[in-house]
Length: 304
Image 1 (cartoon, rainbow, N blue to C red):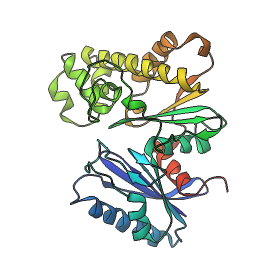
Image 2 (image 1 turned 120 degrees about the vertical axis):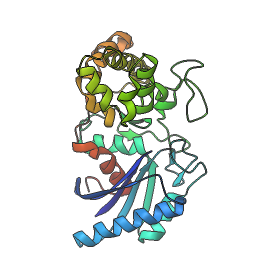
Image 3 (image 1 turned 90 degrees about the vertical axis):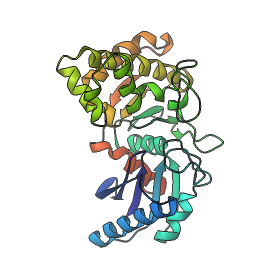
């Protein structure tokens, strides 16, 4: 089986994948480790337990992470991770697990997962957008994953949406991520006069619940978020011309609160030559398996 690892800003998921199916899975906190070496040790410890439990043999490792350079196997100063320096995680995991490891950008991994197994299957031109702690983008163009010269192309979340806007963890200001990530949505709710008690619980579900209960600030929060996201997606469509956009991540679980205004606004801001040629859908894989399946694809699994 392939050991698939998906590193997020708060949680790191891992699982064993066989024939496009996540057989077993586990997760650990991304934060709270002494350093990147202790973090790698923790992943390896949990991975060995999965391998022992299934009695399987590990063939390779695939890792999806923010700011990952697929050419070098290094996480390069990721703003949403605890370590602000370069981390050669592919080599670190290969050494610990005794198997070949491939590291790629997390959104690129998600794109591969959706393309091979999910809602993007059959589309040779595809955009996959991850909406969570950060915002990432993965692009399939002419049937190939776009990597770029640095091995991490597709940083949709760090395209500028608002000049001199909200400060971003990347060091710039006004990035799309600062408006449509979990943090961005929570900030918008507060900016619109929302109840600070509502967001004492992490994530966006409390705001979604408030919106469904009639909280006007919460309702406007999703409208504004949809407007900003629609512009970001329309701008990206103008560059790569996908036939489909797949959204996945915790924010997408808000359902129609986000998707209905997003669909409406997207049609209004999309360049006219793309009207009717691109749709927006939610992930076609259960419980965001696209990230793990994509990581597994990086590691060598797939249709062979």
